[in-house]
Image 1 (cartoon, rainbow, N blue to C red):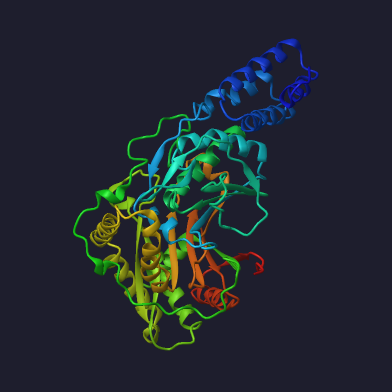
Image 2 (cartoon, rainbow, N blue to C red):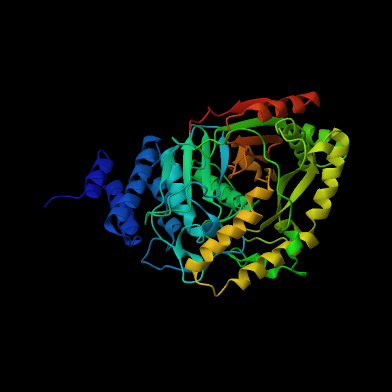
Length: 499
């Protein structure tokens, strides 16, 4: 009888081991096989991940008994058993993305952690195999309902990939194998790229921290389940899958959405959704001190620099320039939802009035406090819910063109640039020693030429600037503005991605 690929690999794995160890391996893989009810190709793929894991640890000198304990089959849970599909309605922020999306303009974002050591792909794959069950809304595909799109969970095998392409490349939703996120590695870096329909930066960071926590445990590190690192074998907690937008307080007001059309930065938009990424690495404490010296927060200070740089990169001398600033609503009520729970507002300045830096920082700080308040953000959430309710019983095929027009009117045309600040990311103490930097990348959408982000860990702040135009002027001006304030800036950047 012809032996299958799994049996051949197991025979190779057991080569040179004594009878007792061979029996332990057979018993372990019998248990693995019984814990997986997937199509034959997917099942073989997952079993192969365990075989490679066994090979990795045995080569490192671990005993068979130790490896069986490290790769305990309980880490699979019941995720790969049967075809238990669940449907999840989209949250109020996510609902617009598949409606307003056009090909090549999928709202994506990337979160990356740079580790102290080179990534072991075999362990990262196993970490993903074990972690995904803890995030049921992430293991899902987008489906067309009669009235709305929705998420349908899938218990298939997700694969980590070596990074070889442009960051945040849109994922095809035409293919049946479509996934809403991808996990990538490159040298010491682990990245997760999300379609925004799944989650926001906060929920995405919880996934990244939990994934890396599990990876580090497989690598022999002692990582506790704290500071947003979830226990992968724990049941989903109350509130983690909640659509918090439904709990908004206050009154709806369309005026919260209405804003003047923004000026746009000069430069020809390239076909590639990102032409270049520049990271400005700074001491976070020093950056905070600098911002305070101007009378504002770090967000207000960086926003002011963006206004100053933009003014020098906009040919028109009259008009309003808007910088969109997302607000993490969890800070107001302590929500633990892993889904989208961010709103936004526009910091606005007349291009002709952008001048004194100190006055600009203080003005923006005041706008942040006023426009980004809990009351204003709740009002915007309430308005979003009212707009969605008004279209609830309109069939999807009629709703798409209407929502695309609304999205175009209320979307990118009133934004000149975006600044999203993840703030200081908390990690368990033992995890801090394993991660050197965090990166946050979010491509601009047309007609915008750029976006910017901030992420801080271990007192290192990475300020990232992404553009999709052929003009590098603004990134150079930003560096000069930072250095003028005495900040030591280490700059690293991508190549110029070709159109």
